[in-house]
Length: 144
Image (cartoon, rainbow, N blue to C red; front, side, top):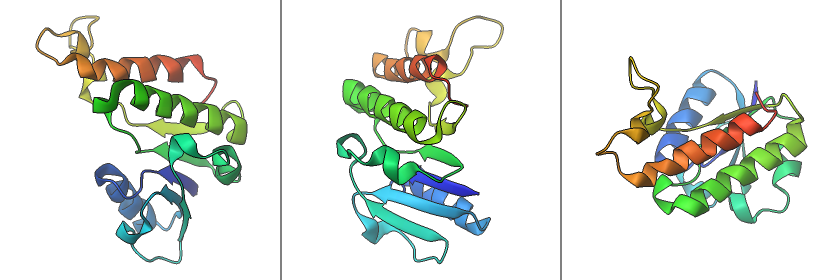
């Protein structure tokens, strides 16, 4: 499988990268700092900043799936903007039905026996509301 991975140098991204390479997937990693990445014949690196790369859709072309591990929920509106940029670029590159995996976090888990998400609970910090915004954007898209 050909994977396009955003945020491969971060905590979650490094774990996804290691797992993908261990399974012999071909990975293109878009990062700001490639020094944190391992050397592998199945790894191609492209430098860039997700929401500032005008060529994002172009460099995604030819991949089977896009995985977004970039962004930080604590950055609220910047995070939701970044995810929307990834959704738009993936749609432009892979087309409707293209495969996109985006981290959501425990805030989106359903509370058993209710119609609530964890983010709806009283002691869950409102910062996690950005995950709901991102989920809504994904559900509006025509991506898989």
